[in-house]
Length: 440
Image (cartoon, rainbow, N blue to C red; front, side, top):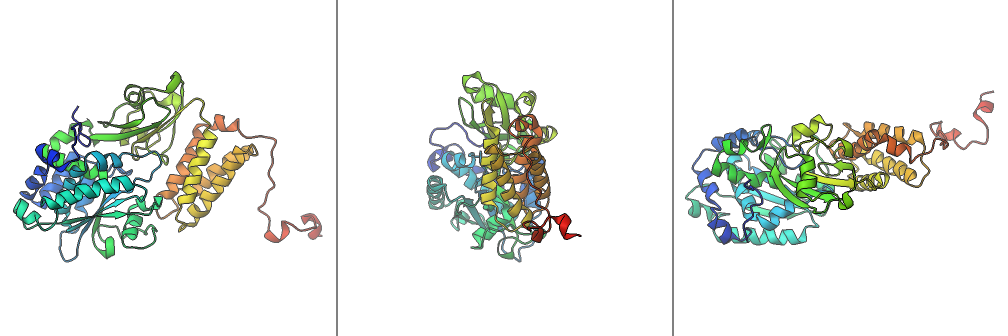
């Protein structure tokens, strides 16, 4: 199978090698077509976002207004701060020019003259690598005003790398835009959506790095070719980042719809010591986990995972063997989302903290059976009640881990422990008089 995003070509990150392999030809081909044609091809290809939501890329592009009375922007989201996800940095390191070319085509299609590649602050190495590739592209006249001469077109655009400060919330598109503007990374209330009111109040499109990197190949080989790879409703290849208890962790580019068990056993070498799998999180730490005995027949694409009660997310597959302490895993995940909550929404700000407290109580051996229902209750009250999806990201691991591994968690709590009920009127909690005496 041909690899679209991470082709196995030596030194493919070097601009001369990329050009030798037909690099920057797709963008020239795109310039010979209308913007609507490009958008239509991407829409027909079925390319869906690889950043988590799996939304149609072409449809998102079509939301951009056709008028040119305001500046338009493209944001390429390389924040990649989801625990368990480490695919985008492979593109920065091994195929940066295809991403740059995809950025140019996308800018042309939506009418943007400026693109920002937003990279998480901790990615020092990959920021330098991408900056080198971008400098080389500028020198060759593939980016910036020199594009007019290179491609014989009136269109040109500039690409800038914007380094984040390591905030998970800035992976959310509106927080990302606030960060680029120099504001605090707070999610914005929608509507208005970025296509109408994005960077500095202007129309903006946000796409993931992997999504953008697919675009040149779609233009080169046609939308029918791309639509024929993998699952029809979620076509193309996907970068799966496999981590945890596997013999060969790493990033594997495979057609969508590849069996989860094949990825674990055929490509990632199986589980060390041939242990049984207790749990798998299929799309990064925020996605609902799956029980080890229910992995047979599960395919890795958006629709198939939705049918089994999970989601594709970023394709970060986290494998946990039979000896894994799921309470420790959940405590680690919950601590992360509590720490990374921006604090704007009360359900998330307070709820993530309470979930961490209760899970740590269970971890200390002081948890009661009622704590499990309390955790599900808190998670349910967070879900759907926040401005951005961090609420769901924090709630889903807790709610689904406990409901799907209830037997496991029941063994870690005590039926004998009865916690005091604290929902009395504040002034009566520490009163020296029993409540019954006060009412006489």
